[in-house]
Image (tube, rainbow, N blue to C red; front, top):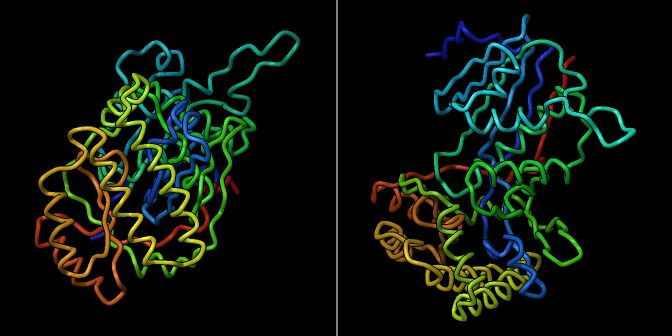
Length: 364
């Protein structure tokens, strides 16, 4: 049956702004993208793939001054009488949207400069967000949603932001929300799409597009969701603290993870899938030893049983502790591996490589 429109919300109109951004699967080098960890590992790089699990934000102007923030996937909604009420509120049911809206408030510029912020904001609006990613899946659903929402707000308010400025603002606000450091790698697939190597250097962050045919990624990877959401910030924070506190074992692990990520980049460029499988196994072995709770009994069972069905390697997406697991398979083993995942009570998330990254549909 078709979904009935919500009578409380305006329908998309010619005046609506709509932004979309994809989630990602990380293949190697995760957690190194937390500042300043990558500064301690020369040649640090992370490798990831933008996938067709999408996040979106739609903003529609309405008459009056009310502001409605609605999350379609979590069924959370909050209406404020006006912007002043949003600013003064301490109860934000849709915290991600509320915190980003606050960042676009009109405010004085530097001395001699004009005000910055809501240059194009006139009257009230409805902001509706949606994420196709399951909660806590480890495929950067929240970061991708931060990107799509930031981009939609910038377009709505007339604030000029390039992609790197969108990344910086989205990353900083997400850190405020989860109250621990956030890495940068999750925002680049959302912004650019494709297969990427994110180079992390003292001189700055640089994204490199890797020439890997999207069909090869689709044929060789299966994504399973355990159904057990986790908080990536907590796992990353424990590893972060251990590294900064001088845990020599964690430091050595990350030295090896950095080497694996560099080799993964080269293997993907060469389409050397045998080496990709070896590196994926090595990365997961090292990562699961960084801190307790990164793996779970179900994840261990999935990895072991899919190997007998034809999976060549597997690793948890994101910080671990639940969420998604990515499996590298031979093309003729895809169906067998998917059946094992389903039989264990997990769910296969179909995907293809998203080639576009962030897209914005402007008012007509």
